[in-house]
Image (cartoon, rainbow, N blue to C red; front, side, top):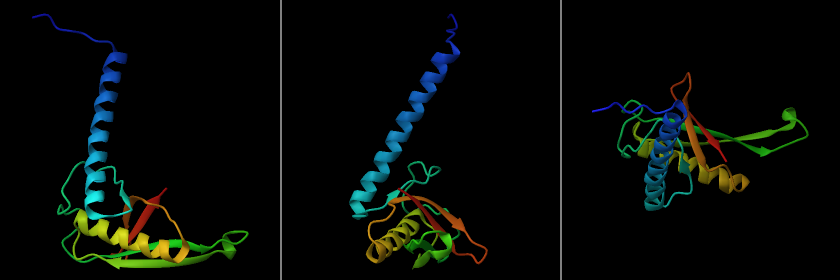
Length: 136
């Protein structure tokens, strides 16, 4: 059997296509769960893959999730008023974190109008709480 040799460009194109297919499958997985849950937020944590909602990504304990939003924007950052909304998880599972993020989003939306729907990260704070990071 003769070994098939492909060009670097062909290899890179094949790898990019595989990456794109994987991304689309993962996006469909999370979009279907979002629809099932009736959420407005879009879970967009890059390293999740297609894991179930009961998968623990933090320790098995409650977490305070905080989300800081601008409630009034002045002429510069010094005249900006911030609002912090919170939610508490029952554990460190993907589902509980997403539920808390959705709650924070809904609180921010109610207080200041439409807000960022993409859930991009949960940053661990020194006090053990999680800070929600969103994007548009």
